[in-house]
Length: 454
Image (cartoon, rainbow, N blue to C red; front, top):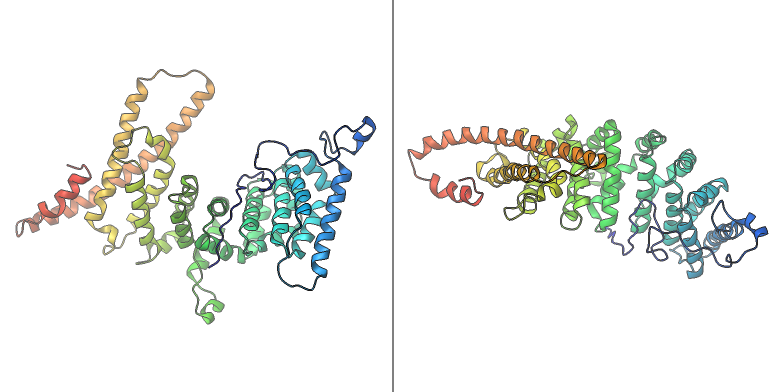
């Protein structure tokens, strides 16, 4: 498997060249030789910025020369980008964070130049920079609309998801997420994704094999957004994973399925990124909202069983612990509601012989859910004694918090009710067996005591 690790940290939507702009919330320094210009020279400036049109033209021209030189060489391997050229191109990457510059680049047809470079580039760093520049251009609605109407660009970007260079994959995923998130063009991109069948397998491969946390989070956000926007796409991907193609059968390979890929990435992010884990749990929850997804997870010995075990560990070992203050519920409510929602569906479609249908495996989970309800009650009591803060903004924030907590409490209460109902049936059977042998105290009482159920 390919190792997708990367040292660069360029995880914001408005991305910046890693080597040249570690500070993401400021404009880059102007290109050289621009300070102290006369009033007559300001016509060369891009919009209200101090960036030079002439310098930008020269750098883009040099970009075309770079890729031409690479393709005239005898070597078929990867090429290195000269440091001076890299610095100049990274300035454009940073400059594209400015709306005026992004608009000027679009007007100058820079997207076509960048697309041509990407298609011919044999230098991963050069490809990454070009995709990064496009990603910053796409952050503004007008320029995103123009970019999205370029069908050739759309095809090339989707094919880039099959690349093996982690920084390029990160920038490509960020660019696609930015475009899909724009309501004016999302339908156009969704149609392209549906037509390009390789997208599903490429994303699944990344989720299964990557050890790069930034890349996993961004890919998870992209998959989650696609599923949230297009239920039919989600059905298609779930079905494709469960039915290998003729080519896969001939090669004796099993196609990577979406559910197991999401689970593998979630495992990677469990201890590294709670925010990333939340994204993947939400995507898994979306799978449980469609019949095809539930069917996939309900297969005996399949992904559903592994997912049950993983989520039980997350809920019982990582979240809402006995020594945590009740306030922790506020911090963990999103993770808890997604995890418990998925567990509830898995429990409802359980096989009676499955591991999670056994009473002793449910007790720790029951204890955690009781603790959620207890902490919610204690939090409500403590909040009632606090002085209310003034301001409409604060009231709106509190209303959102209440809505999120309500979803968690409702999910917890319903799931707990289902489990207790089944445990009651088990208890009746145990009462019959107790008359024959005294196994109840030695088998169940320690578990009940450990989980504070007695």
